[in-house]
Image (cartoon, rainbow, N blue to C red; front, side, top):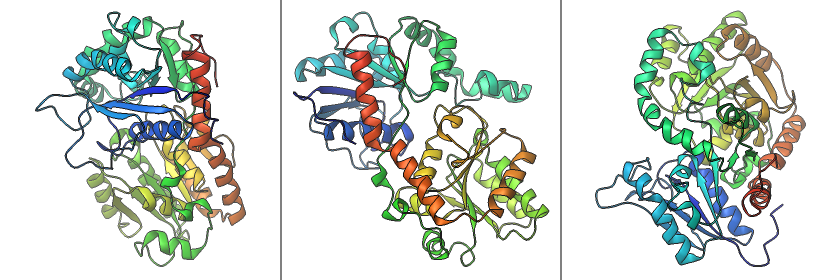
Length: 428
């Protein structure tokens, strides 16, 4: 349910390096969901971000406050952090706050760091920062992931993420100031406290606009006709399938998933299932070669990028969804998206995945990178015929947990408990 509108509209400035106009990413849609949810609750919303591209990926949000960009002639419009953006952010945000009488600033990720500058922080309204993982989580430099990497891989990782080491002093200084922090999960709360035990972040589990999924996903019906509709003839007839999607890069574990699927098919030839992978990245070509070399190019399908209504149709039609992440994700948005479509999930038991997969009815958690365990889980999931009422019940539970309205209600509660009252928080 949408939180009741305040007696006098609160004015908020959301700060993020990028929004869906820049790229179709999780954080970007998260900012848009906050903006639209707060406006529905009666807030006046302003957004400060980097310059928008000439051809936006998605239309910029329609705000009842204003959309503000920070950049100069020649500034890149790809939504990335830049030195100019970070150096100028606090002054620009302060000017917006004064002009529009902003009452609260909500920063995303590393944009909270310049806003804690002692030259500006005393003059800004309360600033709350959402941390989507620490400086290291969701990278191979994570303390747990690093142990599983070879020496050669560790060397390559250090070079690839060298900029994070340069940023480390600023990050540590930011955490020492014990700012008001929000996180997506209890997992990130624990990771932040490892870096500064004095921190007391508030965990606000994510929600999102369920309207991004089609009506088909709202009422899952696990029938062959739906499979045919979702796949658009991409599979043979109405073949059942396992679906996975995301950035196709090594740390996401898609190679482990493909190898486990091939093992499951070899060990259980009677399974008529297919593996469908949506997304793009450097692992796409190796995955295609793996399928071809195994003589399974007709059973493993790589779709390229998929999103929006198409994503909802694939999820609603799949026998199960899979997330084989080898890293430690700060939340697990792909799991939540699958669940709201009624789809059971196979996921690596890592990061915050266990907080999203709340029960055995939602899915199965599997040791990350364990091909044999993934093979067994795939065999069990694909051999199981689930009735439509079970999928409908799963979707109903997930839609109650992960709706934008439920998320905004939790978020407003966190504002009241932490920022507006100036009190340290507890889990909302």
